[in-house]
View 1 (cartoon, helix red, strand yellow):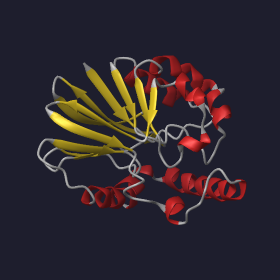
View 2: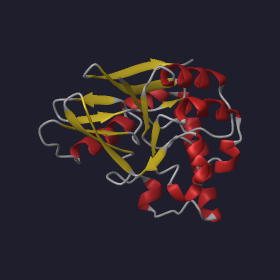
View 3: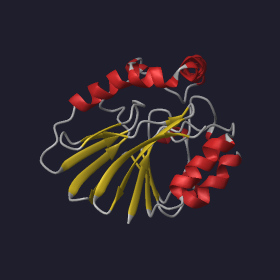
View 4: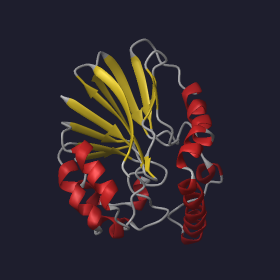
Length: 219
């Protein structure tokens, strides 16, 4: 059995053919898929606009084998039952047993709040949503200039902060998204899927009792 774990694709109604092809390529061979939040971006688009976009062509590959966990950019309150188009179950967190470990999955924003959580901005309120939207647009433009730099500086720092917040017991592994920097430390029981955005891609697979972090580019 092959398990795929990824997060932070931040999809909107704007379609990216290269990103689509990459996601399809890693999703198709997986027997189970876990999306650890920020699959779509509720700061930048409405849920129905995302659902009706060309990304819907990806949904049949996900629908029957995917467990989707909510993130801070795609909280439960911003979507509806149409989530069933791309997952068989939606949760806040999930536990599974694989590769001889108890593996705990969640987005990570509950353990490490970022600016929207710290300021208690509520994305379902229009004024707050506009603040989040324009802030995210500016941030995206900055990151897009040098995504690798951000991943190895600010995002790495936040990922290490998240890592320091967990206290795994023996044979436990905590895997998060949220902080956009891929990392896997099996000895310390910590993993982060990174993101699939800005041309960079990272994700985790579990197959034949091997837990592997993959890093590549899709353009």
